[in-house]
Amino acid sequence: MNIAIGIDVGISTTKIVGISEGEIISPVWIKATDPVTSLYGAFGKFLHDNDISLNEVERVMLTGVGAAYIDRPIYGLPTHRVGEFVADGLGAAFVSRLNRMIVVSMGTGTSLVSYDHGDIRHIGGIGIGGGTLNGLSRLLLQTDNIMQISEMALDGDVSNINLNIGDISAHPLPGLPMDATASLFANAQGNARREDIAKGLICMVLQAIGSATILSSLNSGIRDYVLIGNLSQLHQCKEIYPKLDKVYNVRFIIPERSEFCTAIGAALSKPTPVIDK
Image 1 (spheres, helix red, strand yellow):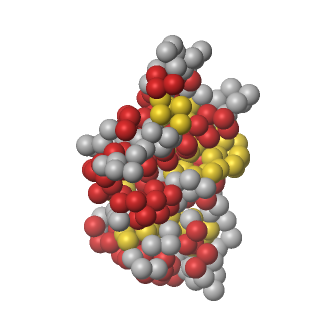
Image 2 (cartoon, helix red, strand yellow):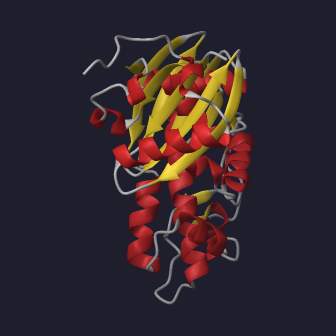
């Protein structure tokens, strides 16, 4: 096999996939205390789990903020860097099979990338994402374990946290149903349950990302938004984004393997000058 390996190197988490003849080879991810340890741990696990030898690897494509820490070829293999926004666009297009979309990369913060028949442009972003959820949860819930927060939120009632249109108006406003959010956290009380706070925090982050995405596409004609990154795996995405679909006549899409899209896009990228130190 001639395998292109894409690696999305975070500060503490690394995701890795292989692409061979247009097919994705079992993605894996690894957490570690630093990006170099994380990368080599993920690479070794990927080769071991898939019974792949080094001579079957054609090239290694690195992306993500942690890629800057890699200054030499990985195990002597041809190693290249790929821009993260390019990787986002290519990966989202590959898994969604769409030709026009806004790619919403939900990481520590959120970046927005326009993909239009192969033309990839970074159009902005917001400083709200998984890092926001982590930080506020540490302050308010004494935990930053995302999965624990998500599980806690399953028993939460967001109406105890947010103010809805129905709370301030006797009739729906034009284009807005009675259960649409009027103000995030405006209904929160000092004795709010942890479950309600968890639900409120997740809704705040996901709704803010959704609103920013919709605004970013105004006058573009694009109505398809592909969600990628770790936050796209939250159970609450399947609750919140269909409501935005209905209100704004758009389509938020969570593709299969959405958390690995950036690594997939890196593997699909054309080789750039190699890292040769």
